[in-house]
Every structure is written in structure tokens, then in C-alpha cells.
Image 1: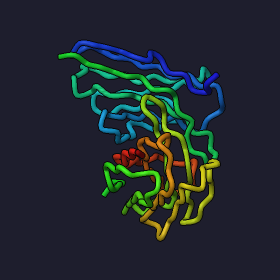
Image 2 (image 1 turned 180 degrees about the vertical axis):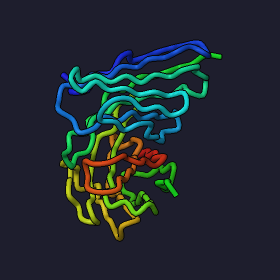
Image 3 (image 1 turned 45 degrees about the horizontal axis):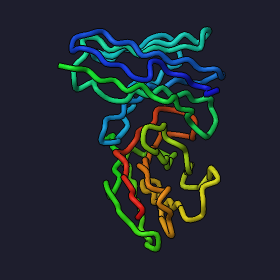
Length: 109
Length: 114
């Protein structure tokens, strides 16, 4: 069983829709990361959080440490949001990150 | 400058070739990483450098040889690779010790081994 589970694996939405991607983990963590990977390959760090909620533009990330669960929300989705969104946790070890398997998001115009 | 720059973006090599991937950051980060990513899979950690010293080698075959000449530069030397080594190779850095802080990734070097 993967230590980091994401859902859904694939998500198709219409432009403007509110999107939620979920991440559950089974280990104690020091931080949780949300990453975005476009088809070209490069990965962008969206959020790093260890408690509460963070917002950046149309993106909101929340984490519930007791429930070992995090969500990434995208408001007013746009086709340029189409990408793979990856949840990853760091447990304070030098290995840095344990990755989820990613959520492929496609936003249709 | 908040960038991690990787070159080349694409590389095609034969199994007998020797080539290198290069990664550079000028953010003063002291931890640098190499990841390997196959299609539709999450990245897999290969090597971690902390303060220019190799701190983690995730049992990577010796045909991959990392090098950290200085705090801004990380190389991955490739020799006698196999077709199954074809993948996207991602470099990343973080400010302090590995396992702490936000990761900054490069765009990756897409390697094809013929």
C-alpha cells in the first residue's frame, strides 16, 4: 500500500468549475507538498504546508494533520490549469519526499 | 533568481556513449537532488548532495555517476546506459539540509538511450 494516496487519478472539468484533489497519507510528516507538472516535464512547487490552509491566487491547499488528509482546490478552473498534480510528503528524513501517483487534470474550454 | 536550470533538455545516446547532464542553481541552496521519472510515474530519488557531499545514493547503478563541483552545480555523468534508462531526469534543490524546506525543480532532461 502506497504511503501517499491521491484521488481521483484522472479528472476532467469544464472551464470555470471548482476542482478538488485529495491526498491521504499514512505516516507522520513534517510537511506536505503540492506540485504541478505540465506535459513538458518541469515540476513547479505550488504549496508546502504543515498545518491549516494556504492560498495563492486561484489555488487553495488545506491540511488536517489529525486526519492525515490534504486537499488542493482550484477555483474558476482554466484550460491552462491542465497538468498532473502531485501530492508529496516529507517525514524529515534526508530522502525528502514520498510521492503520490498524481492526478491528471484536464480542463476543457 | 528562483530557477533551477538543466541542460540539455533532450539527449539521445547510444549504449556505448558517455554523456553528462548538468544542473545549476544560484539561489544559494545547499541541498541538491537527482530524480528519475518514467512516463506516468512519480519521480524516484537517485542521489542527494548536502553541502556538496554525497549524502544519499539510492542504490543507483554505477553507470550513473553524480558530481557536485561546487555549491551551484550538479552533474550526472552517464556511461554504458541501457534502453531502460530512458526517462526524464529531474534536478531539484532546497535551501538547507535535505528533508527540510521547499523543493525547486528544473525542467528536466529527457534522455533516450538507443
